[in-house]
Length: 95
Image 1 (cartoon, helix red, strand yellow):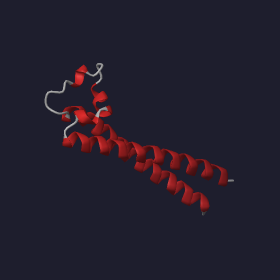
Image 2: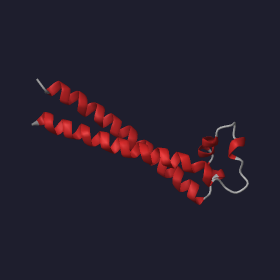
Image 3: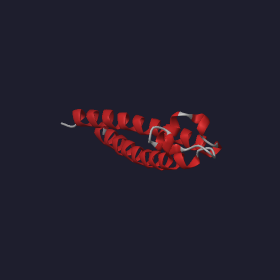
């Protein structure tokens, strides 16, 4: 019974991690396109994602996307950790 619960938790963590990863990727793609007018995103050492490190260069929508990306990164990392722990415990419990 414990193994089934841990396997279900592992599957849930994998699903949450996959959704969080797609939200993270979509937000990261959209952030450079939401910089303030007049900001050259290619001028930031050649990487347009560097605009995420400087919130003063982002528009209101860009700031919202940055926050969504950071939340998605948090949920992705937590789901990876929960999935890892649940998987290892399920492997240890199964005879």
